[in-house]
Amino acid sequence: MPAVRLSMRKIREILRLKFDGGQTNRRIARSCHISRPTVADYLLRFEEAGLEWLAAEAIWTQQLPDWIGSHVRAFAFFGGVPELAVPDNLRSAVSKAHRYEPDLNPTYMDLASHYGVAVLPARVRKPRDKAKAEGRRAAGRTLDPGGVA
Image (spheres, rainbow, N blue to C red):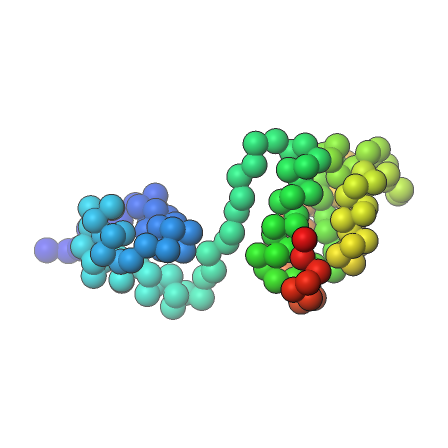
């Protein structure tokens, strides 16, 4: 009898429990109602494919304290900072959008100067700018552990 393939939702749940939850294969199998060898098989496939589990953080708002805090936690998690940040034109990052000289929020500018990050907001109504920022691996620098707030 051929093996039944798992849905993407089930595979994502296995990966989430393993990497975000730090659960054992036995607990994952019990939680997802599948066998331990199946869990091990999908984890091995994930590893062999050379994929990485991305970190994401859910926040309640995009207000300034949440926005700045998310950046600080992201820099700490990755152990470094990118050379260039390309945010959307949300109010917490950009006070006034402009094609050539956007005004950055002063607090966001302070964060960028503290970590040595250049900020170049995505242009208004230019979705290609955002795609480049999200799809490209930026060269980064390792942080001094004392530099993370």
